[in-house]
Length: 234
Image 1 (tube, rainbow, N blue to C red):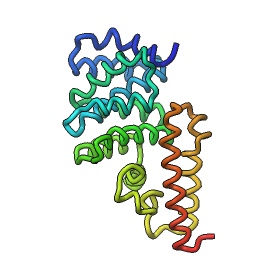
Image 2 (cartoon, rainbow, N blue to C red):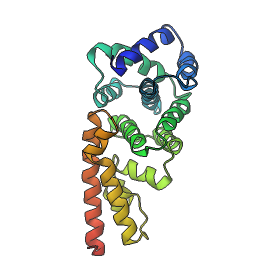
Image 3 (cartoon, helix red, strand yellow):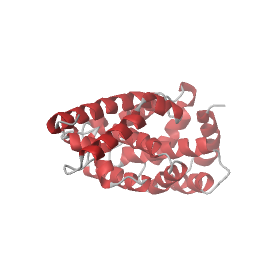
């Protein structure tokens, strides 16, 4: 059975007719506190709920936001209704989002690249209307903090999705203007390694993440080339 099938089975008994409080309370209690829960199911439900709450952060929920989530995570047609129900319940308000962000962080504390993949997805949802609203920015910054990303790392991730930061090579790499050449080389090589398609496949992320990583890798390469040319780095 796929993880989506497991999710629909677990969700069926928790959400039917329940208010959003049931989503935050019953779901969080069942999956976050149950140490024996399937990590794949825990991760998937937490991501669905977090994405739904991201969609509500600007106060306006749209169908396009779910469509982006569905495409990125390749939700099977037969499971779309179940996943949509979780997503829609979650986006009734943003209360409880820190529970889901914390659960995802605990599962992948030693693999920040996966956490960055999730944050990338949330940014894709946020930019579906072409604007990063202040409430969305606050939501994403808090999630990044829970995930363990430093402010400069958050700015780097944000810069891969939104201009004008997209044009600043130092922000794209997440390094300061005063960083030494060796630090810049080391950071560049790490980012390339983490965003290489083979690395994504190895850590088991959905294939759709590869497109996001490919776009980000192009920006990383372009940023390093600009800095290298400016500094004359060999």
